[in-house]
Length: 231
Image 1 (cartoon, helix red, strand yellow):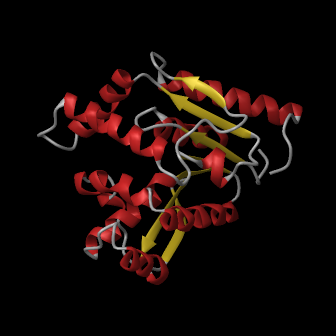
Image 2 (tube, helix red, strand yellow; image 1 turned 180 degrees about the vertical axis):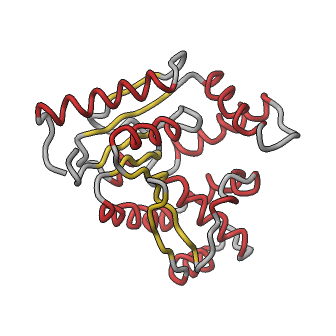
Image 3 (cartoon, one colour; image 1 turned 90 degrees about the horizontal axis):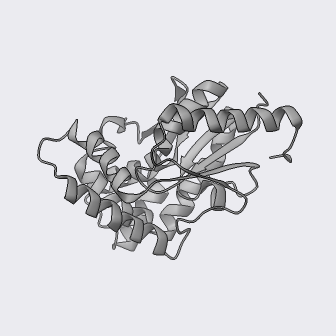
């Protein structure tokens, strides 16, 4: 496996991209990056500092003053924010409710984009998100876009959230997903879209293993036949 590849996996919420990306990275022996963790990390920081996303001056102050330290643990990129590890809080209900609004701020997206590009120092990456193949690494030769129908995605998210929270309803989860889709696809900066040249995979009815196998085989076959340009 070359040490300078970026495999970009994009898609909407609960399309399976996080689980798939993590397993693809493990199968290929490269580092896994969850770009959404950076947006959730900023959201966590804003909540800690009582910063509303509409407060432009305070948002910029956090972006300017906060210190981020990135490192690889267990094959995954982690980070500290001002010396604190927020990892266990990134999937909390409070963060989940606010992250779409935070991620829509242009300055936030540029901040995260800059940090994501800097992670290439860790070698080849599997990076998942919503604009990896379209904005962060548009030059990548390995771009995949995962999708699934809303009912399937809602079921996946319900199973995920129900394991952590007792008071959760399927219809609320589904409505939340649809609202997030609307915000992601209509935001002025880096909206959710299928990246140019990406291979689209509809994961509805597919197992995680099937999707992982599909991507791993494609990457390996193209590396072996050198059907990609330099990244």
